[in-house]
Length: 452
Figure: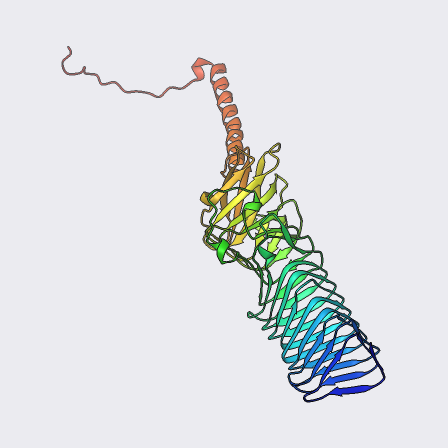
């Protein structure tokens, strides 16, 4: 073991340092200055109490046994760093100018990370808690599970790819269209959960959340304020769904949403997005065929929804008390929409989905209803012709429910008419025959021709 306290060491040009044990740097600075400067530590190394490791000029550092920092800093430029388990607590990682950091596992706690034009790769899991991480024109790859709690990420011109993830109370800002957060799924099937966005998880910005394989759950309290693209990899993309069915394990990737907000969404061929209509997100005031009411939504989008050919949108847990799916934008339904009705004991007309359009195209030919043989669907427009609504009629006709009221009013209108007629007939029957006047009819004196 090599130990250093409150000291400075520089590994210069053409110098290689190897430690068979581990390095323990306390309040010290170690600098590698050139492309021919190398450092190797076989056992676990530590950097504590304000210590700093600097890498410059294409140097190479290998912490085979792992590196653990506490209240310290890694300052890397044009450096290559290999590591077993990289653990940083209350520390700072600054990396720039074609730096590459590769680790078998990464753990950040209360750590600030700033990486520009760099690559960070974890061949195992990566987790962070309470950190601030900024990536510019950089690439982050996690080939196992990514776990984040109460942290803040900012990606500009950068991509982050993870195989699985669990994210809670973390904000990920994809600041430009060149940035993406990709949930790869590792080739998992549509019924295998690979991702979870929990309460307080927020993805925002101009970039995209892309989901490739497996099941992604969007839990209540999570927000997707960026674009959402559900698109399988090239191999699965060539498969199309032969039959409509609500078994989401036959779709890949699959995403479920409940009580949250999502951005503009694309559901590609073979993929599915399932909306749980028993969940609650917020309230909106809608004009449905001239009648304005307040509706509680189950899920709301902040952009258009594009269900491409072979893609599937599902509204499940449908009852007469279902909460509608709100789309603030247009709906393109080249694929299929399926409604899963779970209770038909109560009849009625319910609004299940709203989207914005000046021309409310009838989409019912692309809608299949399961669990209700007496149900029908129809599309209703707002009185201002700016919004469209999908209505499901359980145990009723698909015509406007106001039709029943008009029919009832028509029947009620017959009552005074019948009463008036009865009164008139009674009045005539009770009159004295001499009081009844008859129209006078003049008869010609002469008979008709042909009679004498």
